[in-house]
Image 1: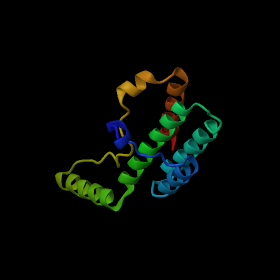
Image 2: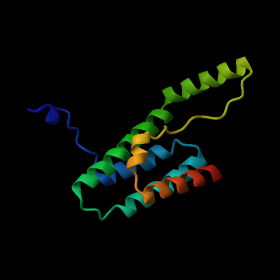
Image 3: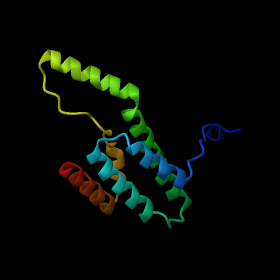
Image 4: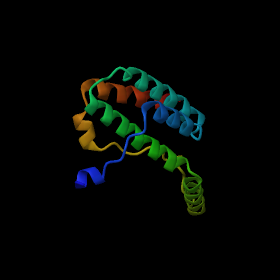
Length: 131
Protein backbone atom coordinates (compact mmCIF):
# COMPACT_ATOMS: atom_id res chain seq x y z
CA UNK A 1 0.00 0.00 0.00
CA UNK A 2 1.42 3.37 -0.98
CA UNK A 3 1.83 6.17 1.50
CA UNK A 4 -0.79 8.16 -0.38
CA UNK A 5 -3.36 5.35 -0.06
CA UNK A 6 -2.58 4.95 3.65
CA UNK A 7 -3.39 8.64 4.25
CA UNK A 8 -6.64 8.53 2.28
CA UNK A 9 -9.70 9.38 4.31
CA UNK A 10 -13.06 8.85 2.63
CA UNK A 11 -15.12 11.97 2.22
CA UNK A 12 -18.46 12.40 3.95
CA UNK A 13 -21.28 12.05 1.38
CA UNK A 14 -22.61 15.50 0.34
CA UNK A 15 -26.09 15.21 1.86
CA UNK A 16 -24.74 13.87 5.17
CA UNK A 17 -22.12 16.64 5.26
CA UNK A 18 -24.77 19.27 4.50
CA UNK A 19 -27.02 18.03 7.32
CA UNK A 20 -24.09 17.80 9.76
CA UNK A 21 -23.11 21.40 9.03
CA UNK A 22 -26.65 22.67 9.58
CA UNK A 23 -26.84 20.63 12.79
CA UNK A 24 -23.53 22.08 14.00
CA UNK A 25 -24.84 25.59 13.26
CA UNK A 26 -27.47 25.10 15.97
CA UNK A 27 -24.71 25.77 18.50
CA UNK A 28 -23.81 29.16 16.99
CA UNK A 29 -25.21 32.52 18.11
CA UNK A 30 -28.46 33.33 16.25
CA UNK A 31 -26.94 35.90 13.87
CA UNK A 32 -24.05 33.63 12.89
CA UNK A 33 -26.40 30.70 12.47
CA UNK A 34 -28.67 32.66 10.16
CA UNK A 35 -25.83 33.82 7.91
CA UNK A 36 -24.15 30.43 8.03
CA UNK A 37 -27.28 28.45 7.20
CA UNK A 38 -28.12 30.72 4.27
CA UNK A 39 -24.58 30.52 2.92
CA UNK A 40 -24.31 26.74 3.26
CA UNK A 41 -27.67 26.20 1.57
CA UNK A 42 -26.76 28.51 -1.31
CA UNK A 43 -23.31 26.96 -1.83
CA UNK A 44 -24.53 23.36 -1.82
CA UNK A 45 -27.40 24.28 -4.16
CA UNK A 46 -25.02 26.15 -6.47
CA UNK A 47 -22.69 23.15 -6.68
CA UNK A 48 -25.18 20.27 -6.80
CA UNK A 49 -24.74 19.67 -10.55
CA UNK A 50 -20.94 19.81 -10.65
CA UNK A 51 -19.50 16.72 -12.34
CA UNK A 52 -15.74 17.36 -12.17
CA UNK A 53 -14.44 14.81 -9.62
CA UNK A 54 -11.45 16.94 -8.63
CA UNK A 55 -13.71 19.91 -7.97
CA UNK A 56 -16.16 17.78 -5.97
CA UNK A 57 -13.35 16.40 -3.79
CA UNK A 58 -11.98 19.90 -3.15
CA UNK A 59 -15.46 21.28 -2.38
CA UNK A 60 -16.31 18.51 0.08
CA UNK A 61 -12.86 18.61 1.69
CA UNK A 62 -13.13 22.32 2.43
CA UNK A 63 -16.62 21.93 3.87
CA UNK A 64 -15.38 19.05 6.06
CA UNK A 65 -12.63 21.35 7.39
CA UNK A 66 -15.28 23.99 8.07
CA UNK A 67 -17.43 21.46 9.94
CA UNK A 68 -14.44 20.45 12.07
CA UNK A 69 -13.76 24.11 12.89
CA UNK A 70 -17.39 24.81 13.86
CA UNK A 71 -17.56 21.70 16.02
CA UNK A 72 -14.30 22.52 17.79
CA UNK A 73 -15.39 26.10 18.47
CA UNK A 74 -18.81 25.12 19.79
CA UNK A 75 -17.79 22.14 21.88
CA UNK A 76 -18.22 22.28 25.68
CA UNK A 77 -14.42 22.35 26.02
CA UNK A 78 -14.22 25.43 23.79
CA UNK A 79 -16.91 27.12 25.91
CA UNK A 80 -14.93 26.45 29.09
CA UNK A 81 -11.77 27.87 27.54
CA UNK A 82 -13.66 30.95 26.31
CA UNK A 83 -15.24 31.52 29.75
CA UNK A 84 -11.82 31.18 31.35
CA UNK A 85 -10.35 33.75 28.96
CA UNK A 86 -13.28 36.11 29.61
CA UNK A 87 -12.74 35.79 33.38
CA UNK A 88 -9.00 36.48 33.07
CA UNK A 89 -9.70 39.57 30.96
CA UNK A 90 -12.26 40.83 33.48
CA UNK A 91 -9.75 40.41 36.33
CA UNK A 92 -7.18 42.38 34.35
CA UNK A 93 -9.79 45.05 33.53
CA UNK A 94 -9.49 44.41 29.81
CA UNK A 95 -12.35 44.81 27.41
CA UNK A 96 -13.35 41.69 25.52
CA UNK A 97 -13.90 41.99 21.78
CA UNK A 98 -16.38 39.10 21.82
CA UNK A 99 -15.84 35.48 21.00
CA UNK A 100 -13.57 34.53 18.17
CA UNK A 101 -15.37 32.49 15.54
CA UNK A 102 -13.90 30.88 12.47
CA UNK A 103 -10.28 31.12 11.48
CA UNK A 104 -8.04 33.23 9.28
CA UNK A 105 -8.01 32.33 5.61
CA UNK A 106 -4.69 31.09 4.32
CA UNK A 107 -3.23 33.81 2.03
CA UNK A 108 -2.22 31.14 -0.49
CA UNK A 109 -5.84 30.04 -0.70
CA UNK A 110 -6.92 33.63 -1.34
CA UNK A 111 -4.37 33.86 -4.15
CA UNK A 112 -5.94 30.82 -5.84
CA UNK A 113 -9.50 32.16 -5.66
CA UNK A 114 -11.26 33.47 -8.74
CA UNK A 115 -12.68 36.99 -8.87
CA UNK A 116 -16.15 35.49 -8.45
CA UNK A 117 -15.08 33.58 -5.33
CA UNK A 118 -13.46 36.69 -3.86
CA UNK A 119 -16.65 38.62 -4.55
CA UNK A 120 -18.72 35.98 -2.74
CA UNK A 121 -16.32 36.03 0.17
CA UNK A 122 -16.61 39.83 0.38
CA UNK A 123 -20.42 39.63 0.28
CA UNK A 124 -20.38 37.04 3.06
CA UNK A 125 -18.11 39.25 5.14
CA UNK A 126 -20.40 42.26 4.69
CA UNK A 127 -23.50 40.21 5.53
CA UNK A 128 -21.84 38.87 8.69
CA UNK A 129 -20.98 42.43 9.76
CA UNK A 130 -24.64 43.52 9.35
CA UNK A 131 -26.06 40.81 11.60
